[in-house]
Length: 467
Image 1 (tube, rainbow, N blue to C red):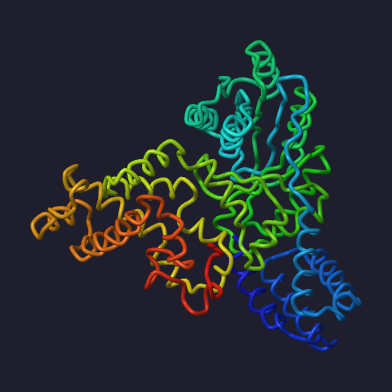
Image 2 (spheres, rainbow, N blue to C red; image 1 turned 180 degrees about the horizontal axis):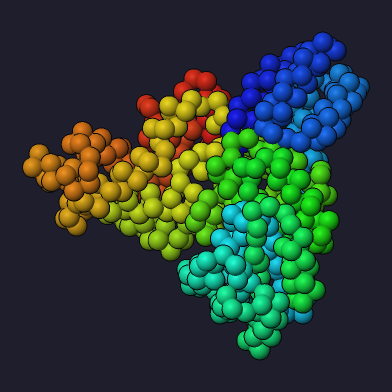
C-alpha cells in the first residue's frame, strides 16, 4: 500500500532535505508537487485542499524558516499533517461491556466483510484472549453462511449456524441469546451487502443494529475504491452510528487515497487494515506509523510487533540452542525460517516496513521477493530427509531429480545451495555467543540481496544501527 504515493512524495521531499534556506518559491513548488501526488493517489479534493493549506501555513511559520535544518523541519510538518488527517493515534476496539460485546460489520458486497469477521475473531482470540462467536446474517448471497462457517473453523472460533430461510434479525437475536448462554466474550455479526447503497439494505442494517445493540459498528470498505470508499462510508454513517472502519485489500492498493480521506470525510477512525487474504493479515491502524511508511521512514515498530506475535518462539529458541551446541544448520531449518517469514506477510511485507525501501529499485526487491521464497521452499520440499540434513551429497543426478520434482532448472538448485552455504557460515558465527559479532560484521547487509547489501541509492550508509 502507498507505493506510488510514497515514491512520489519521497522524490519531492528529498529535494528539501539538507537545504539551508527555504523560500516562498521552493515552498510553493514543493506543495504543488505534493498536491499532484495526493491527486494521483485518489485522495478526496476537500482533504487535499485542507492538507495543503495547513502545511503551507506551518511551512511559513518562524519555527520552520528559522530552523537550523528548515528542509528537514518541513518534512516533519508534512508528516505531522499526514498523521492529523488520518486520525492522530490508533483507536482500539471498545469492548468494555457486559459480555457478550457485540461487533457488527457493515458494508457493500465484495468489500471483504466475511473474511474480516474471521480475521477479527483470530486477532481477538490471540492477542486479547477473548472467546469469540461468529454469526452470518447474510441470507441473500449463495454460500455466505458456509463461507463464514469454514473460516470460523480455520480460526478456531465458535460459529452460530443459520440458514437462508431465516430472517436476519431473528438470526442475530438467536445468536446473541446463544452467546450469552455459552459465556462468549465477543459476538461478531456479519451482515449482508449490496452492490450499491440502497434503502432496503440500510433499513435491514438499522433493524439488526437495534436488535443486538453492538458496542462496535464497523464499516468494511475496499481500499482500491479510493476516495469513493470515503463517500460510501459517509452514506453508511448517515444511516448507522459507525464507530470505526476496516480498510480491506490494502495490499492491492498502491495509491492510498481511501486511508487519507476516510477520517476527514466521515469523522470516523480507521481501526484496522486488511493487508492480505490470510486470516492472520489484519493490522491495527496506527496513523503515525502509516505516515512514516508513506514518507519512506519505515515502520520498524510494527515489524518488531509482528516478529513477536507471528514467530514461533519455541521453534526459534530450539534452533538457537541447536546452533549454540555446535549442531549444523540444515536445509530443513532454512526452510522453517522461510516459512516463518511468510507467516509475517512474506519478505515483501517485511521490506515494506524497513526505512529507505521506497528508494530500492523494484528489480532488486524482486530478487528477494515472495516468489523466490516459494520457489526455494518447493525445491527443499523435493529433497529427501537425508539431503536436507546433509546437502553435501546433492550431486548431479540428485540435482536433476530435485529440479524435476520442483519444476525448476538445475541452476536454481545450485543458486539455493550457494545461498544456504552463506546462511550456514553466518549461523556458525553464532556459536559460542558470536551473534553480536556477526551483526556488527553484517553492517546492515541482508543475505539474498546482490552482494549481500543494499544498492547505492537504497539504505543510507552504515545500514542498520547495530552497535
